[in-house]
Length: 382
Image (cartoon, rainbow, N blue to C red):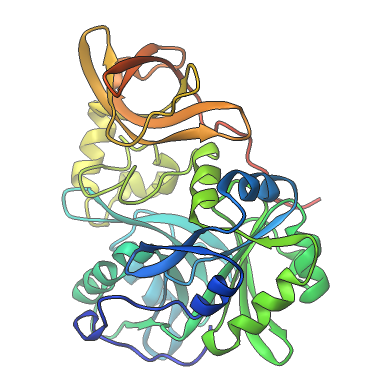
């Protein structure tokens, strides 16, 4: 990460912040919409075209709205930093070797999800990437609960690009040699044209891909270099959303919020098994009770019959009884039919259960189906 650690209180920010690539997106033909306090491109050529290009080639997404943070112990004490994070997160942080990443959750005392995030051992600190729409709340929560000798830094002068698609590895290796050695959920420090880059290999599309953190003053130069490759095209929020839905990945503020918990959300993998039992993290008691008794509702995937998509908020029925609500939905370009995520009563969450979704006063037949809807294509090594 850059050593530029300027920080600003959220009350001091303008109502609308500007992405470092705002002018670049407009010059590329991006149609801008309000999102997370910024104007961001929703599409360039069209959502379906960008979705399919990502599945078959490489797309460049701007995710600079997300919060890039670090947590450091006194004098770089990684043990102290890990212990501080493990008091708030249910995952095993201390076992992460340098360059390793872990998906985790920021929980409140009731076990509700404040945010989902990625933690990386970026020695001599832990790097965190949090969602843009709630980054200021996350920062306030962390500052309130981290010990005084733990340093929390917000890298506001860093931009973040996501390069996603099956050819992303080849593209980035040609531009930044050495990045091709990264595998899924690993990260490292690289130099490109004397510019420091922090590169991780994860992704939110279900495809192989990278996240590239770069000083904002240089991000336009990098974006130009990437799209100069004929295999790379810019893509917007629309394709990012349809891709993550096909991949079965929840979106904070829609499929996850403070009213949901990790057990109901089907995110048990984020609760390291040993720590489920030992506890010591915020929200452990209520989550342990849910683990023991089972959740009242569960997040499920739904295959929807016909062509009409079911949107967020649509009620889900078993017969005449409402048993849940859709949290994300849309038409799947890859599968050719509508899909959705919903929370439904646990007794109706079994694979193959026939349900109905009410859309515009019409009932659409739907079937509970495993997620991901489209197989994930992460690179885990040869």
